[in-house]
Image 1 (tube, rainbow, N blue to C red):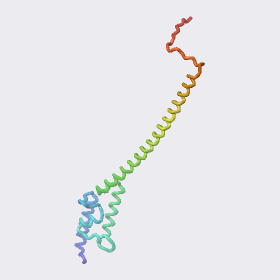
Image 2 (image 1 turned 90 degrees about the horizontal axis):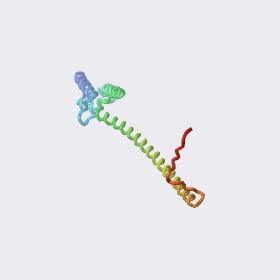
Image 3 (image 1 turned 90 degrees about the vertical axis):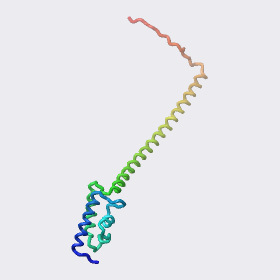
Length: 153
């Protein structure tokens, strides 16, 4: 079915109005910032945006404007913005988890080495006490300390 020039102009105006709303972030419930939602909100068949149909130039314009906004760091679709934010947050959390696991591994190794050193030192102390107890050449010092006060000349 052919449409008149007036109908085509009216459809284009309606499509551009919906395009502006979508790119401002006014996404209808259950919709996205995409051609499917643009077509349904404009009451135009989606196939009209492809091939030799009447509105492929509007699809190209919409995609270009959407890409420009995304490159500027603006995401008009709140769902897409949430997805992007959650992906970034997930990446950061994975990095923190990896760092924490590395720290835990390092601390576990340190603990193992410290316990091994303490065990070795304890064995050395026990061995030295046994050696000291078995020899008579060790002189035990008295427990009380004698203080000598001298005179200075």
